[in-house]
Image (cartoon, rainbow, N blue to C red; front, side, top):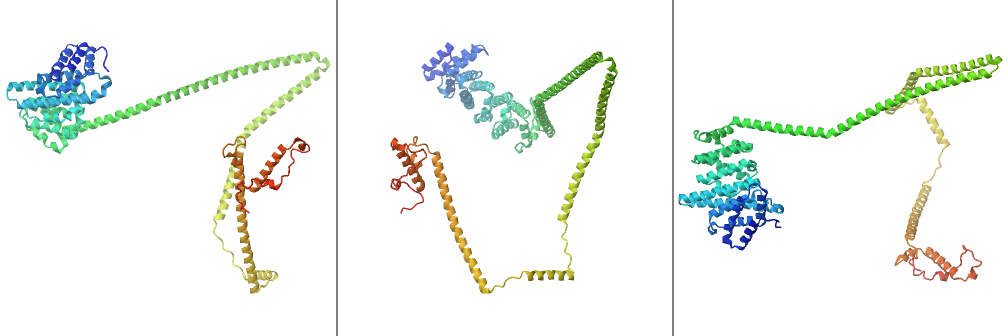
Length: 598
């Protein structure tokens, strides 16, 4: 979707690129540099221009041109180097909008890879160049492409991992040329200063290759510039990542590295960095690094634990506040209830006092009125009766008070008495169970030996019993006949029991069949609503039932079809006799279960 309000310069440029032949496209794309340079940096207008350039596929055209052979491009490496600058400046700060996935996953990695390929080509041209001026020019183009790549990586740090893992970058790093090696090492140093974390995300083989090349340049390269840059780079890698420092200190591949570094010249410009690197690789510094690492790990664990405790307290804070509010409200409610109760008691006391005063006043008024009514001669008698009534009332209240006081005094003793009775009952039950258990678990006691007199007495009792209950003597033939009769009766019993079981099974089957028929008839619809094969549910598989149903049906039909004068003497419950030949009609068509044909 093309954006609205596009810059007319971008429109004209895109139209010119579309109409021009392929060999003129690179020169036309150079006009983008003028458009970008004339726009204020950081302004919204520049962002809009970059978005228009991307939407009209001018960035894709730049990528296609960078992938072509420089000998076919008008202007050669000058045009290509300027196009790399244009491409890097357009990609940084660009908002791709809806095409973000394609921009970040395809276009940017492709641009970084093209930059590395261009640097490989420039490296080859630099090595093959014969003249010094030509080498300086190619080196200048190489520096421009490298700066463009660094600008692109600075704007999109996610590309650093792709660049570090690229084989082209590793080949550039392994060059023996001093000038190109210095530029590549400086690029790597600047990349790690931007984001050194991507160095640990690359594959282990690639990381070892980079470390090997950096160490090789420190130890074997005669150029002090490359040695200085390599030393600073290795020092940066060791200080930034403890894993790399441990690898340099403990790995068998780098055994003796510290001794080799100690043999390097100390009077050079990078002697300070070299000294720092040697001190880092020393055992004492390594131990300090390990202690610092452990200290950081302990601090991290403490931070996580304190954070967990704080979050836990914060989570419990609402419930604690709620509990505090509940306790405060409960206490306030209890205090309010207590105050209300005190007010009610005070009010009730005042009411009782007023009632008593009112009652005394009424009583005195009543006495005065009675005194006025009573005859003067009976006044003494009236006073005596009132005194007796008053004395009785006082005695009644006094006795009630005394009995209540005595009861309250005796209540603890009554409670103790009930408790003692309960304990005695429980103890007696427990002792009874113990005695019963002892009797059950008691060892068997042997019977007492019989005396001679007891033996004679028991023998006399046995002989008397045998004499009174003498059995009849049966011969062997009679015994065999009796045995044969018993066997015959037993066989007859078993045969009869088998027949009874069969009859019982038959009855149960008939009862189950009848129950099934009844259930089907209960669930079947009425004859008016029956459709299809549903009337077959009304057919019975029992001949007596079918005959009875047929008889009732014919009776109902005859009763309905008979003239009115024949129904004069009939009642509702009378039955009409039906001949047997009529009953046999259509009975042959019924399926009667459990019957045989005659």
